[in-house]
Length: 500
Image (cartoon, rainbow, N blue to C red; front, top):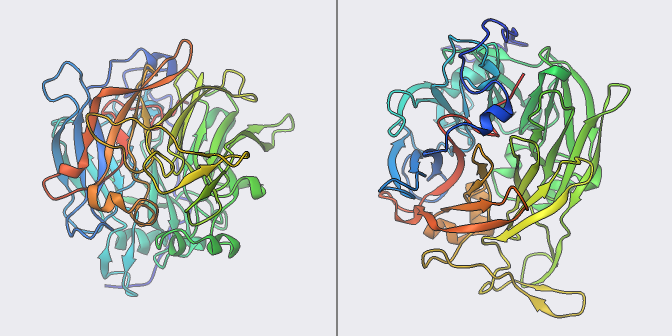
């Protein structure tokens, strides 16, 4: 088989938003989605890669219906056919962006495998970089594998590897951000286009318009804009976090502003020292709005991006999580490490997590320029009581967070991925970031695995409280403790669906 890489550039994307007037997947508006049915199931990506257990990663189905006899339990597991995938994020083949197309169906959950290990011959694949399509329609409680997109094909046709974020497009295509080339170099990153049958179409961006680093992205068609963020070079972050790699320029600090759907890089926003490692990118859900937020992990700032009067884009720090002075840790100060964030469908509340500190926060963002803290709850972290790490206050006193036990379980790790119910009243949280980083910062997760929590959110007065009746323990899995990451509802959610 030929091993030359024949890169297909700028696969065409059509905007078929007006093909039909109704009856497509999802909801006509974000507010209509808020009135949708309560969630009963949630799909969770579960990882054995990097744990030392030679078992395939899997997609678990968790019962979140409080009236069910199996509430708060895993009711199905779909193992992938290979070992070593590192399942990470997920997305849909079709969502509310296709609501105007009655022929479209939200059927397939798309699961990129983050880790890529390849031989020099791109036709010989050792491990992963695959993209799985999982059929959730035949039996929502027990999804089945539909198709595997092999990394050799992706690399050969596009040069892309390390697939991460998935978004469906109104055209019926599926777009996947990829964070590097097959060798883990960030320069090879870009955006993969799959058609509705999961065939590789090519790259989305125009030739010469790839970002410096890749990670997440969100598009806002009414403003003809897509914005992407930047984690770092896979060759760096897959080995664990090394602060020297930041100085070496192997991690990102930029947002990339693209024309939509043309794929031309129009502007690069340098977030500077206040915006190191910008990760999850969220526009407000109202498609007429021209503002959003990105969580910058290392500097623990929520940065607001927005369109200016002249049509260009700018940014400002909206929320700062101050680093804590600590004892008995690897550094004298500990950043919060904002690793995930989301916005309620009515654009009233912003939620984010501090993976190292261990808290989840709720902010009222009805005035997007001036977020107001309305809720905070501690659900783990490195500074909880019983940890060897203590916070040192300015007056010299020491402090640790009071984290409750849930159903007799000490909460381990820190809050990482979050998902919000459509009505905005229930927040779900898992605690695995990425296996190499889990092993480095929370080695206990390698032995005991993840857990999943549900947080009650007060949407009237504000506030967060742990639901003591919900606890999913991935320690007790049949093949041993696993790491739980992204969560998706069968009917879509506030981080999967985009309105046009």
